[in-house]
Length: 148
Ligand code: THU
Image 1 (cartoon, protein in one colour):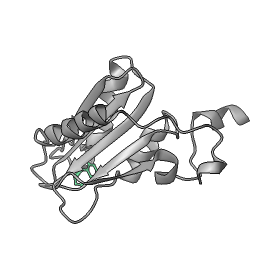
Image 2 (cartoon, rainbow, N blue to C red):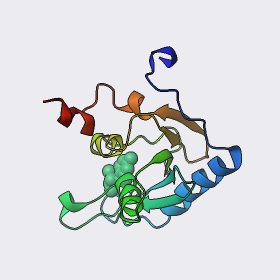
Image 3 (tube, rainbow, N blue to C red):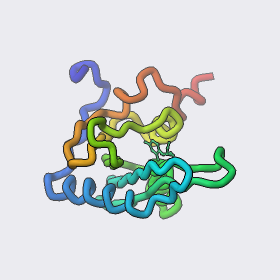
């Protein structure tokens, strides 16, 4: 609930930036390497400094080694020196259902804070937005390691 937040929610990205973020997630989906699932996913991550890093799912013949689009985008951003994020957009080909990140990705996203936005889209470009703390309530994070 809005009033229960310890920190005020950061402002949503300006419309133009949000449209670009959504577009970059769709473009990233076109690069998906998913010969096994045939379920392409794209993600685009907006950093606090305004840069966008995108990623797609990358599958492998050894199935357990596949990586989701969300984690590809995060790894690209982290490895370029960005650890503070404002928003992520996720795109898939599903027409009737908003794409949602898997549990593993939610935990990886949570590593970098609980108060940023995730835009979940349908193939027609419509979206809903969720705070990370809504997607992963009662989460465990880096701060908890300091509590013992
Ligand atoms: N996948 C993602 O990349 N992100 C999601 O949000 C859900 C699922 C990928 C993993 C796998 O390559 C394929 O979609 C089917 O699960």
